[in-house]
Each structure stands twice: as structure tokens, then as C-alpha cells.
Figure 1: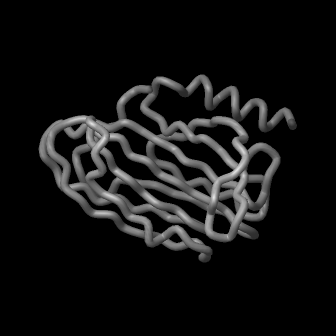
Figure 2: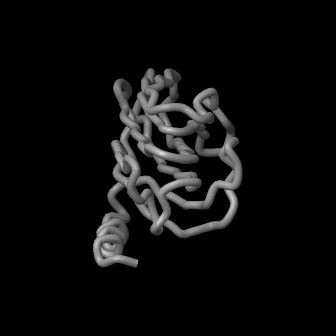
Length: 158
């Protein structure tokens, strides 16, 4: 592993406790985005735009790689939420309440495609939620992004 990657991972570990995503990385075994071999964990800020391009995505791998990530958030009041996320290739978004019940999902973006932005709109009641954001890169250009455009939700420290 290169020094640059080690420093990035160290920085990610230090960031724990600041309301970030926990990403669990896997190799991808099919064009449909099936996760295979577990590679390890990294962390990301709540809002991100990771542009890997044609370079290394993570763990020395450029293609056929993906992650499942989660972040806990708090809605301090009832709120409408609008999220914009982007992906090349696939991504999907799940929202669960504090009891583990699925309250929203968007999975039509889990496919091979050039970088494409999607919007997810849903209502949350006051409370704690878990966002799950999955991503995979099959080949060539790689990018993933996530941003809250509207809504009173704040990430909770891990």
C-alpha cells in the first residue's frame, strides 16, 4: 500500500465521531453490482463528491469495486427531505427508522451508466434514522456523490 493511501486511511480513522459515513468495501463480481470479497472499511464526510476518474477507487483497485455505507441522522422535527446523489456506475439509497423499518428506498440507479444525478424526496418525522448508501463501479470512470438539498437532518456522531 502506498504512503498516500495509508495517510488517507489514517485521516479517515481520525474522523470517526464526526457524523460520517462508514463504508464497507467489496469487490464486485458481476455487471449487476453483486458484492463479493470484503476488502475493509473507510469513512467519508456526510456530504461528499468522490471523483476517482480512471484511477484507484480504494484498496489499490480501479474497477469492479463497491461499498455499502451507513450514517445515522437525526430529524429534529418533522421535515421534508430532498437528497441529490450521483453515481458512475450504480448507487442505491435506503432510509430506515430507529426500529429498523424501511421508510424509503431508491434503487432505479443501481445499473451501469455514466455519471448521473438522482433526486430522492421523502418525509421524516422527528426522530433518528439510518441512511444506507450503496455504490459500485464496474469499469472505467468512477464517481459517487451525496448531498442534502433540503430538510432538517443532521448526522449523528458514530
